[in-house]
Length: 277
Image (cartoon, rainbow, N blue to C red; front, side, top):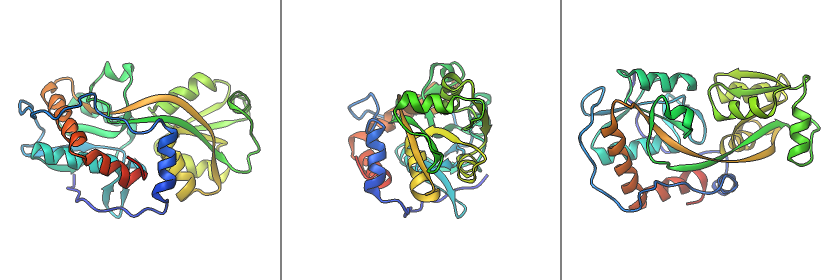
């Protein structure tokens, strides 16, 4: 376990370009609470005085691990929440995305999971979510020379074939969408976005389905030989994962999110990472 310091991020992708990706995802999400409220203190922590966070740190620009430090929109948001709660924020080492909810559910190692978790009814059976703080959609990335085009129906039809291999990050809503809509394709669950995109770039996989801002960032910054073939308007919302045994912490974070929204901090973070409020 290591304490991560805050560090400014200077990305290769322009803020305006990334802002267009967020706009395509339905703009900015926010907490349902419109007025700042007092933050409750009736909650438990793994370690007194600290908010310990679990993340895969492989979902830029939401979260990533660069130069030994956690960074991204979700990371900055965790620090902002910690500031409101008067707690030091500490990130666990990067872990597989699909291991985070079981970790929080079992307790004892981390207080929250903050890793661009889409709020779903299935996940809510295992853990609690805070209020939503950001909206997103899905997208499909392919290599530019793959040769598929057309509208949504044509692209889905082309990918839904036995000679197509589609990469997904295990445990994500992208995997769920692919399994429902591309059942004839060979579906390969992998641990990280980087591995998925590398496979598409090298021709090992024909496509990769994930959150639209993330694959947009990947295609523009790290894998410029790839492109977004399809934007999928799923209308997802991100929430922070908290144990069902710790409802006081969920309430405290919701109050912190309301303050972060009302005092302009949320708008600043969105402008920093996505180029738009």
